[in-house]
Image (cartoon, rainbow, N blue to C red):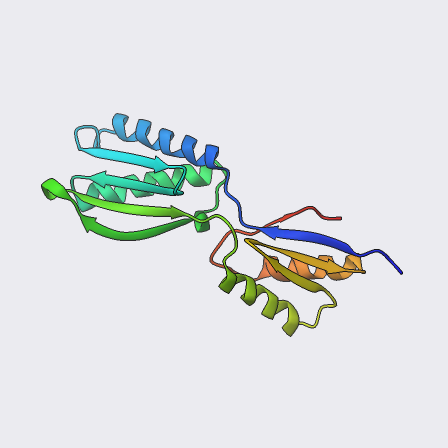
Amino acid sequence: MAKENSFDMVSEVDIQEVDNAVNQTLREVKTRYDLKKSYCELLLSKKEGEITILTESDFVLKSVSDILKSKFVKRGISLKALQAGQVESALGGRVKQKFDIVQGISQDVAKGINKIIKEKKIKVKVQIEDNKLRVFSKSKDALQEAVSLIKSNDFPIPIQFRNYR
């Protein structure tokens, strides 16, 4: 019997790169002329995987979030990994917004990927594990076809392919 080939689909973000993007954003906010004298806090909670922006107005909040997104792009982090929450009122007339950093593939997205692969009738098996998917096949061509199918679809999270064996 021929051995099976496989690869893993994951959604991971390098938290150190996120930390660097947050620090660069803070530096730019402190030096930009239009934002220099405005109140701004930018907090990264690595444990909870979220970024909180606290500012004095909606204008400053939008400017800071735009800077943060540009720093994400420059550092090679997909913007799909950053999910914005609602803008909330904070104490002292300030506004705050939380951004969740997406790590792992949720069950809904995993089932959607599995459904797309089955609809195309590619001869692969998909195994859903905790927060990743493992795809098996005896044919390397079928695996490559599955990878190109996944890359051609637009999912709400960034997807990387690992451990191609």
